[in-house]
Image 1 (cartoon, chains in turn cyan, brown):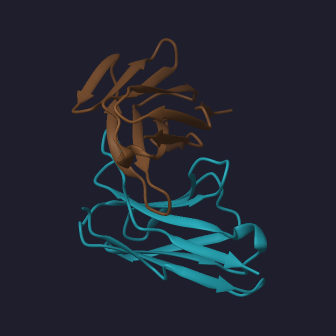
Image 2 (cartoon, each protein chain N blue to C red):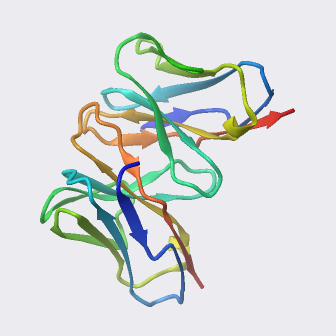
Image 3 (tube, rainbow over the protein chains, first blue to last red):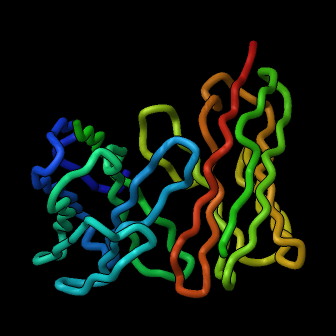
Length: 113
Length: 109
């Protein structure tokens, strides 16, 4: 199994509070991704990174920011959480873009009340 | 827009064969992936197709027709542990994965 961990695994927070989710990998893969998964929807890309300090927006980036100061860590921040951001968040990694599959972390279940 | 369609739910019997279909309309095509996701767990990679035809891997096979925008995942000799959701994803022209909503497969004894 690819070495990917996410923390926290579960979190309940209130509307308007900032939240940071962490993804940590031990594979030295260049690409890291943040997705959200909601019932009735496919996985949706929030942001991704193609190297240290190199990030780009995905399909549903509004309300989220990311940072990658080290190869192994990719942080996702909700600046001011809203109930619509209640979801399961998955981090994924891959060696490259073409042909390489993505390996997923265990997920973080976030509830915004 | 980009779209991946899969059936929402399918039911099959232990020991039987099931085919899960996926049709796609995307801006560009750079490969199609199938993932398995058990309830409450992360998706895990099953197969990758970039050329037309059938890729076989044990009890699982995946087929691709690029001209028809169509793929299927074939599961043989079904086991109870195959009860899971199966996710189809297409890599588009920007090398981003576009995901279907997944097909929940229920296996009955």
